[in-house]
Image 1 (tube, helix red, strand yellow):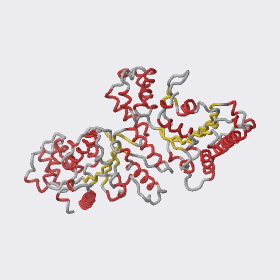
Image 2 (tube, one colour; image 1 turned 180 degrees about the horizontal axis):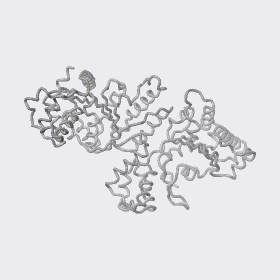
Image 3 (spheres, rainbow, N blue to C red; image 1 turned 90 degrees about the vertical axis):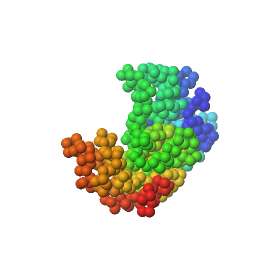
Image 4 (cartoon, rainbow, N blue to C red; image 1 turned 180 degrees about the vertical axis):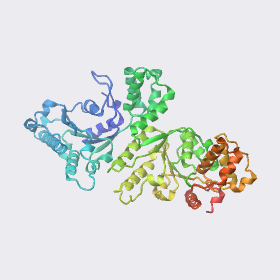
Length: 552
């Protein structure tokens, strides 16, 4: 087997072990997925779990391979005869409870290390795989837990004790998220943290070739060009792709090119477990009423993005302005204009210790696998956390802030991930998150500043419902057009006008007159004024701000 044929994370692991730089490996990320098992002497390529990949591909030359998890206890995966020569093994049954099992495995590692020193000719190459290590060494909630700390300390010693690290022993700790681990384990500087990524197109293509052999119907339209579905489905796990292909095979339904984008989003949302959702980019900036200076700026950025000219491309936008000014709508229009997926982060905060951080880690992993996308964070003043955390949140807010700040400023993501934050209270977003290099462009959205703008907005929204109003404001209605009208409020008015025309209350102009006569603004004017001032103060460029609001 050629090392060059292995994925990058495997090659890194091999190099660290063979160079003596590390003997303990914390494998995290996409560890529950299927992996491509390369062909070797006597076997053909296949798909298998990470456990099987470790045992058959990476640990083929090891004499003894042991595994442990809380459900199955200690299992001998390879080298049973050699393991049976351990005196302790001959004396009693291997324990299954976490504390006792880790203690027994530690004794065996020390036995092998001592044997290598005393009788070098009998040196055994030993590997231990701990599945779901986060279940046996999780973070300690509410302070010190000596049982957990004891287990975590022994796991840490496996990678940091020189007598073990230099005696042909290798240990593998498997967890989906590093944040699920006890800090004694996750923060061990002598353990190598290896991220197993979600497969990209180059890894998916040979895997799809295997699936096509086993399930010929779904991929039949792509039989000679599997690179197309591989590129289209990049970001989804192999597990979910295999499930899709199995289902289509059972139904006798081939896939087609139009299916792939929608199916990819469906698969990724399922893999994410409700942590993200895709917003359908079925609008463009042409659907955004007014805001010409802003639309011009955004179109210029999108042109740079499509050309691959990233030097002036922002890392992110902050859309701010009063409630109802169309911040979410603007992001949807931006996504449609750019022609890339827009992902909305949601439901990642959790009441359980460490769960919020783990959810964020999983979201970031999915985003990195997606390729080019826009990440939408609504109510950013609440979602992004605080540098100092919050009262009674056990520091979760501070950790969320730290993780978001690090991810948003990762320069490797420029041109791949574009952040779009939306809030009516930009003053509550931490200053460091709004700085250039994280949010480079801050775009204010305002309500209407003149009666003519207000009427044009009502007329445009009414027209979408088939209600045709006069081109210009009727003289008798000029004073009735609400000041500081937001798109949200104008939408409600247009619905009211439509309803009136359909229930026999009059023609379009009469319905408009009636709707304006008893209009009540949904947000108090003083609140709107305060939020306008906040948006003006945040604006990156004065060209975004109408003349009326520049002196507020």
